[in-house]
Length: 396
Picture 1 (tube, rainbow, N blue to C red):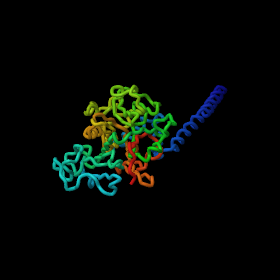
Picture 2: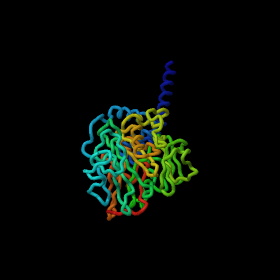
Picture 3: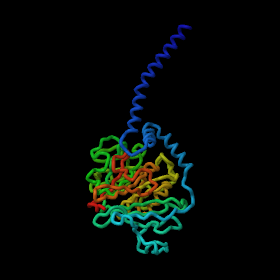
Picture 4: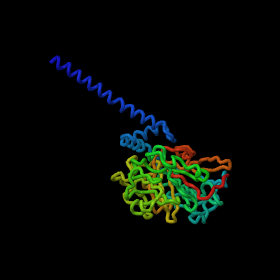
């Protein structure tokens, strides 16, 4: 018995020794992967990169649980009113001055501060303030006109302090580029690199966030003849043609590979279709609206749509549910729309102003957006969209 016990102890020690030997390369590989993620080029903080690494290494459910728990206990306050007035956008030609209606004008609905001829989005709040929903010129000019307009409004009548922004892009005057990130969609290096081509920078009007990580998007990413993930039939998709024109579609129904797009970015399902909110926005059966954060929680969200005239719409705000995001896009005129990325770290839209000395200055669409205003002027961790003027911009 004594000999048998000694033999068992020896066997156990050998097993532990071999287990340790086997664990060393696993730990080294894991450490290398983690350190590489922390030191890769991009604009994320160490904490954000750590979370991204966890999502990509089988801890996604844990991260989603932590995020959902946090947001469930940190919802925007109900009631209240805006602190001050709505932002007034300025173009390069009117830098330092305001555009839009004069404060003394009144529109047909009787709202002080709005001209009767000013085009606007119908406000969603019951008591709109001056200029709420009014379209204003936005960004640098070309041939005396801007390719973009912006409107600010509350997304609902419950959260009176939450302000959303809607950008409308004229595709006759601007084209869209899909730019791969340093980490997402992966499978790099990409032919065009991970930032806006140098020849496009002088005419770059703006840039904004794309969708979820490909692993969470329930779809795929295609650019320059390469695909990451799988282009899923029925997926909400931003489709970019060879001339830079964009459509937002149900993949397989409205467009497919037979249309030969130069880029496709999918994310979940359409939230507006045929000009109407799709059924089931209040439910999340099958993670239709993503599993990263509950679809009913009010968090930073962004979305993209197309209106009946072919103009592109981008919406972003804090304090949005999937339903209020869809309602904003619908009220802005979207006939089809989809959610892009969510959470404070990822929702980002910067407009760029160009000076005669070739310097570029960025401005955030909303001051509360997390990342710096020069994001997208260098390689970013995530893929993103760049808005490029079709004609040369006039430098200030």
